[in-house]
Length: 111
Image (cartoon, rainbow, N blue to C red; front, side, top):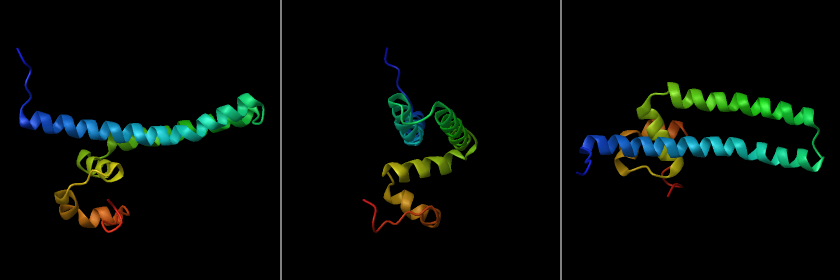
C-alpha cells in the first residue's frame, strides 16, 4: 500500500525541504572559516587559545542561526530561503516585492 501525501502535505514537505536546505547552507557558511582555523592550528600557525576563542565565536553565531530558524515566522523564513537559494517564483516576487527589496533582492540582477 502506497503512502500518498495530500497536495497540502506535499507543499508543506517541499517548504520544509527548502528551509532545511537553507539552514544547511547558512550553517556550512559559518563553519567554513572555522575549518580553516583548525587547519592553521594543526599546522602550528594558530595558537590553541586563539582557536578556542574562534570556536566560542562560532558557537555564538550558531546560536543566532538556531534562533533565526526556530523563532522566525515560517512564511518569512521560507521566502528568505527561496531568495537565498535562487528559487523565488514570479508569484513570490510579485506578492513580496517590498520585503524582498528590503532584504536586498534586485530582480534585475537575480537569475
